[in-house]
Image 1 (cartoon, rainbow, N blue to C red):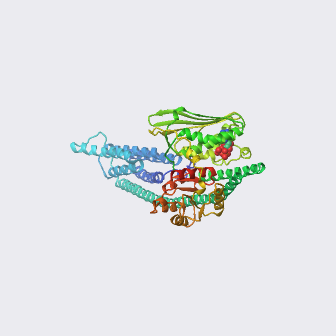
Image 2: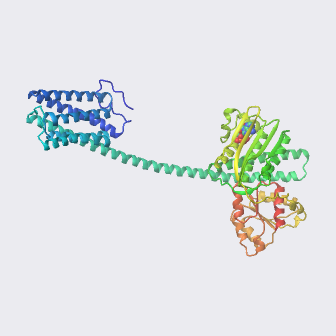
Length: 599
Ligand code: ADP
């Protein structure tokens, strides 16, 4: 910051500040000490001229002395170096003009020195444009004079002044001193600047190295966090699977009514916990930028009906009216997009609507806004007559782990991750969620998405009848289960015994391959994370078997850890389908039946 220099200030420190560049500081210093030198030189000339009885030159020197004092005062009061430099250059130009055409009426060494001084001083102080300007004017003065003199002797009424040699010596000496000073000062500032630049670039280099290290560290720690979460999720999900699976088994074995109620609570709590683990994992995945959106064909009407099917029952349990309104323009259209993520978004919005509504209605709408040749623009909206959200909280509810109030957590549960996940999923696709809400009246969440449309005509598939037909003789089915976790093995065995089947167990991928080689199976259920050889590699090995019958055995993957990106890996490794643990027993049965029927 510039320190406040008072009118009587004479110190250079008060007019220099760190806000000024090194070059500007050097310019101010040059003026400060340069004006000092000029003052001494003119004072010497003045006394010399005075003793020689040269009244005109003495007055001129006196005027210059006063001017130099005034410029010095201005500089030490306000360091307006540009203005002062212009002033000094104009003064020097006038002195030159007077010297050449009036006082000496010749171009002598002092004039040459003055021109050089002007050139150096103007370029250094004011840059190229003004440097050229003042240089040309001063050179012009000399050149015009020399040309005039060359053609015919230059004659003017005034007689030239005759000065003593001592005056010439003082002037020449002072001018040389000034030239040396300007040069010395300039080169000093130049080297200082270069040194500073080098230091800055060295500092920058150090900073870059530090930054790179910090980024590497952050990446490593984020990777470690992701890995930790993935491992934890597997570890947490495995026992949870067992709890949910066992609850399912017990529920299937005709429990008493009071037992049934307890079992339902047990299953509900475990499923809730699982949903939380899934949310945390999913959020972690989105945050670390590992989300890849699918681009598969799907029917939006079916998707909406599937998502809302189970939700309708929940709404009914709370005596809420549930209406699903799908634009007829979407009927029989095959769209391309990521059905899993759309399901996730709609499911979350509808769950929230039901969760935060005590009475009234839930409306779910999919409206076709535009139907161009091969693109559909669809607006999704989920509206409720629930508790509503305060205007101040409309942004915060999209923050991770944010709930509208602490009472929300106590009253309604949840992690506060659902909307954060939705928001990020939409943002990653360049989309935005709109919210309109009024406390006590309800909320509406909506967003608009574009889908490429398939040109194939879609015939709505009829419900999977084959599975129902096939219920007949499953007891003869030879099932191989590759699973390393003993609790899961026990669970599977019990589940299959309900369906009158006795599965064979392989404790890892490698022994599964051996068993397929030496035994005969109709279907394989393959856990993905196993010691020795994992499920993906084992499936790939089986698909490579020379016996085509064995190489084509239907394989269903049993996944526990990953959430949404597993699908592609499962199909890429040659498996036919997958179920996520904990699965609903009937879903697994359905998938087994479908594949066995096709085989
Ligand atoms: P969670 O539902 O797990 O708390 P969300 O991220 O889905 O987390 O929602 C964050 C918060 O937004 C909720 O806790 C709730 O306060 C508010 N909210 C979300 N949807 C609604 C809704 N339909 N009506 C009222 N409040 C809502």
